[in-house]
Image 1 (tube, rainbow, N blue to C red):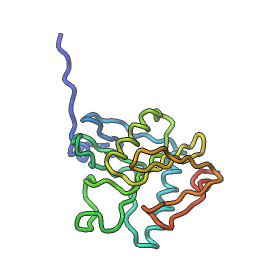
Image 2: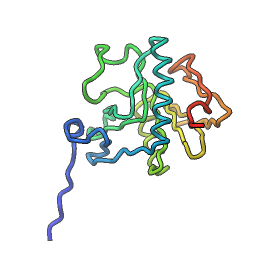
Image 3: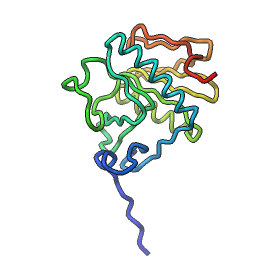
Image 4: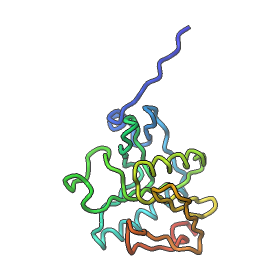
Length: 185
């Protein structure tokens, strides 16, 4: 009896395979990235708000949920795709948007908890982002309508509810929106 060999994928494989935009790469293994309609709506809403703000302030670039990041030096076969992200002006090499994956950590990563997400996996992703040096992480939970705000120092997060205001801190100075605004009515 032989044991089937497990296929190890590379970041380059993810770019060239049909449907690769629907996957992340974790230790060389494909991991599905499926969102429900509500999670996708929230992702689009927060990305539109950020895009409007960054366009008006010329402060950087906002990326959607299909943008892959290779900013994990200890794990070369890792590509993570936050549901939204922001990179401050002046940080992209040559000030050019990469054709493939982004090789630097974004300044902001946004995760919208989807119906099939497991909380321990979301927490693991947050820690991975913190270790990569991502300065601000927002975890948006549609089920309880909260936003958890994390920083890279692994300190306790702040949890915001519908009556609170989400702000960009020193990553996006001046950005503010009501938490209520990012959830469907």
